[in-house]
Length: 230
Image (cartoon, rainbow, N blue to C red; front, top):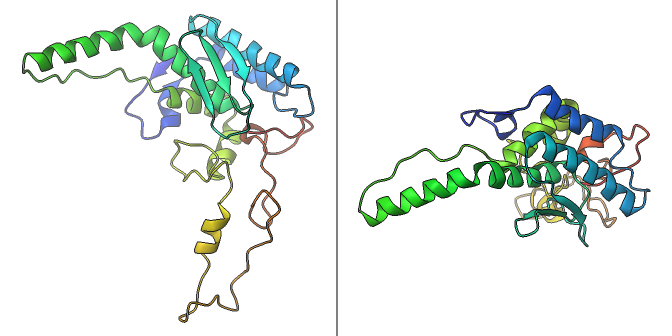
């Protein structure tokens, strides 16, 4: 793993070795997003990936947990028991949580030392301009996703499903119905023009007309894996 914190985009800030990326590719081949499988089996697949990545990056193995709920991007790493918690089975969220664990275990002492030096300089009335650690957990997750599955990454990015990329994030790939209506062309008197396309009736998912239902960005096209979520 090599860090390039001068890259223009987060997904290009970290370069992984073939061995590091092979773990993620292997996990994808286990069909992580087969939603018809029991939750326990899906947790086991993610745990297997987390276990191997922890070994590759030389950190204590976190435990993987699926919490109640179904919120996009809902994930956290718990320092107290070294555990990863997600609200939705998501590769990008899980990788970012691993990135947080890597930041703590591999760079924690360096960060604490810098904070101590900054505090001492402040107390002495001196300026402190030391370069901070250039490791970004979100960049870790996005870069790993891009290198493991570049075509899937671009599809997800261009659909606005990846927070932290140069494309506007659109609430898990959906454009909110309220914003759709707000963006509709209007006539001078405030009424909707006759040539304006009316919004489609709500189906409970508020997707754009013709837009495919949300499935995991790493598997937006169902190639026999079954639909997933992200």
